[in-house]
Length: 246
Length: 83
Image 1 (cartoon, chains in turn red, cyan):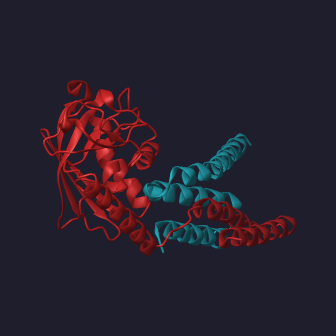
Image 2 (cartoon, rainbow over the protein chains, first blue to last red; image 1 turned 180 degrees about the horizontal axis):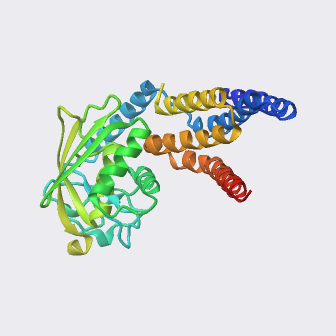
Image 3 (spheres, each protein chain N blue to C red; image 1 turned 135 degrees about the horizontal axis):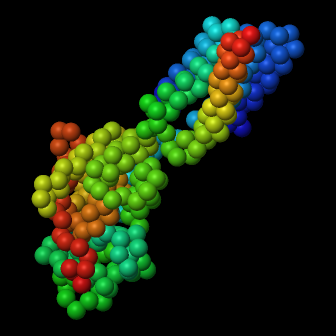
């Protein structure tokens, strides 16, 4: 049995007893203490609802995931940097596309939620790996936090900052826009050496860039992803609406 | 300790001190409501939706009790003033 249930039960029992004694004797002190214990029961039950995973375990998981990603990148000879697609008819939640070549071209009409390897295209520049679900759950959390869809980049900055901070995943998220250039700084709250992340990002960076793509309604292409003083610095560029690529 | 623990600690200290120091149930309930509202406003950033939703019934109950307390006081003032 979890500690929160035991402490809540003890608080509830003590609180009820004190409140009854206080009420019968007409002593406000006991009544107040009884009510205080009952309120604290409800608060403990509500606040301590999270279950935790040790940061060390997260690092191990991320490392294993990174090795898998690197094997995929090497095995499939994917050279391009990741491209983030906003939601559109074929991909209602958007997605992440890793092009085969650096001088990529997009054919969003051929993408769908079921396809992963995009090879059925006439041009090699349009080939690549499609990851429709990478970072999707975190974007949903951002929208849950906002209580509405992401519609602007400041909203993404605010929601991602709050959600990642509350999940102890990142201390800070900063997004700067200048024309078509976008600069994102993420300060991860765990060991996160950015290796090949511009090609195959972790769900945290992917979710922020997916959020930006969704909020702007434009395709976002990553240009670089480097460790900086304040955290991981991502430079990305707006590449126009999905319709323009069709 | 994470932020949730600090918030819980602050609320526990606030509510217990209010219960011990204050000699009236009405004032205690009002102080408890104020403490919970302050915590939710300041620490809302660190709480997820489920936790905020979980606190809603307690806040609503305390607001209802606060309304009754205010109405009682208004009645006392008005009836006192009439006599």
